[in-house]
Image (tube, rainbow, N blue to C red):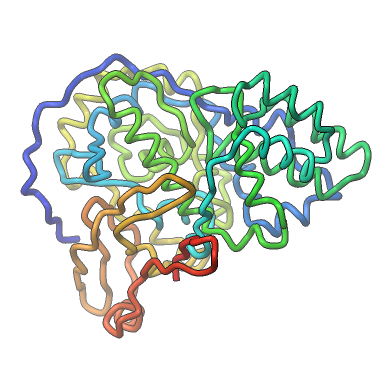
Length: 378
């Protein structure tokens, strides 16, 4: 792979206290797998891989060292080898979520509207819903409350409401985990209103947007807590920086499953190295130390999408982040490596595959369809 973008000055890093991690991922397993009656409903949404993709133990030292090098202006980690970031192809490979589909345009949600949504979609009483939102003081509900509602809907056999409740809990513990460590925003129920349409959303894009947003937030000098889908960031580091991270690969991992399922993080491994040691390792990082194409063998399992090269703004609800621009296509014989400003090369693909999609003008773009002004990757 040809590396470019060395023009930036690798300045001294502002060392900060080790971050606190706000992760809900252990709570995924507290609810367990969906009951058989709703397994099909869950699978049809395209979100079922999230149940298996959870690193239970976050590595505070490792993540703190990387966050110190995140620049919100470029949405990149500034490292000695260049400017790198998590790409859509990383998300697709690590989580098996779709990058293609609608990008939901959530509107600000008033508490009264949140109450009505809970009544309509989770089949709870108005008084019960209002009491919960009042306790949270915002249009949020406690994850424990969601687990209780799920059990009640299963007991009464209201399977569609049970599936929505299960998915709200799953999203609140993974893609949309927040700083509260206990609550989930009710607005995400809007994407679960019609479960037959839930799969149309580009959930992989949603995961990336939220991760960028959390990194932008914690990169501010006064912030001391990282939230969001910790598994996505930590497994991305495991894949691309084997010389930096202390990671254990599951020898029984099946390539048919999301790549994040490959990694095991234990308290022993994550506590064995602290932030200063990770800083030193990152400062010594050189090009041969980086695994630029970790998913090469996944070609038969999960195809590369040229939409991974998409650049410019990505939206999910009120959050908009910028994807770095496509910078270089490096040709090696009959194959081509895709390198984006801020993106590791994640696949080697055929020249013909790229030529058909790019050279003939079918470059991924954002278009706007429908009265809701909800963008879609096409």
